[in-house]
Length: 113
Figure (cartoon, rainbow, N blue to C red):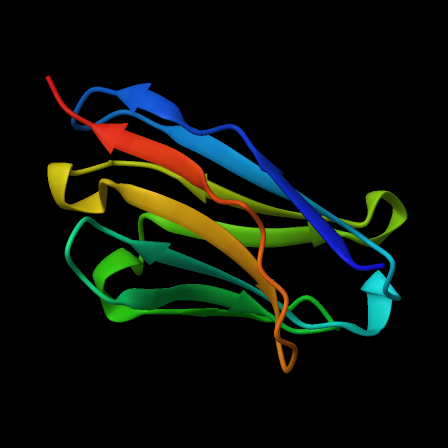
């Protein structure tokens, strides 16, 4: 059974940093590309970043230069380091194994003063 457990969300002031993580179980992690999506209230779920099986990152334009996606195959974990956060980054962040129908429960990130 595939499970995705996200952690690390919270409340942060504009300009601050936060790191969210996601542990994948029930599926071979090292051969799975992983992605982070986010969904703000009343909006669609948008792709934020993807990391390929060889560790190559791909970013959506709104987060380029501020967010860093990475993976640790030994820990079956994908990370999203978020710096220079803005109020418009406020959303529920979800991790997603690329090419599957599996989603984590999401972790709330709120950027507010």
